[in-house]
Image (tube, rainbow, N blue to C red):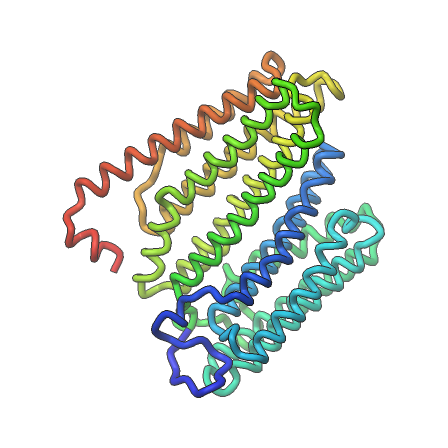
Length: 410
């Protein structure tokens, strides 16, 4: 965002200093809603492993992500310590709790509660932000007028889908989420108002990177909750222990893949680049959705393995789904990391693609390998990618001159 002078009690974040980058306590408080939302998402797919439920789950994951990341764009520019901004966040929290409570039956009887809360949250936040910008940053105010128009347009689809039959709802909401995801890509083009100017998209890079990292921690925490809950309800046999250790190991490996080197590299890059808004759009708005999907589907796969480590329950079709979730979730997560690294100026890490290919081959063995063994083999592949990533990082930093390390991203 463009820089302007700050008055006492300003609605806008300071442009410089620690306050410009700091994640505030009210933002962390706001995130608690999404702890609730994330825990609500995975249950349907565990109970109903089929294509329709998978698509429904992906729609819900994407909707929750959009709500969170769109709010992060706003709190990156507005000052959460301001009383009016804080009040806005509390209202968004209330709407977020209502939306989250409806998630398990969002495609059923609670469709209108889910859609109504979602639309009110998205549209209300956009209008508030446009008003907040109207005097000091008129160009940003126009941006959020465009955003509000897009949210109103997709809102009609969300509400229309909630009122439609259950068969039609899936397709209407799929259209709504696809259009919503197109918005930033086309810079919220509106006939008569044009597109948003990327020159007005400058953001507090370190703040944005930290916020996305915290959301990934929330989603990884859901994986811990799922496996811990299932293990606590098990008979605590050696087989249960091996299943639990496989699930916990997969969570640690996913943490390492992003937080070992990628997180710091991305934070440094967006903090130092002059095109922070463009980087925030690609590396921190679109790509992390793949990481979120990969983690959540891994949590589903882990619970299915914990429930039936040797398979045999539900026949070949359930085992096929379990294997697909074990391998597919890791493939999605590897691809997300692969794209993220390149988006923040790091070299292509082809070990990620090799790992994804190995996981695809592993899936082909599902009929001859039980879910627990498959889970450990998938972990072995992820561990190999983590090791290759670490070796690549060490070589890169060892061979790079000190001055280049300081200036390569400028």
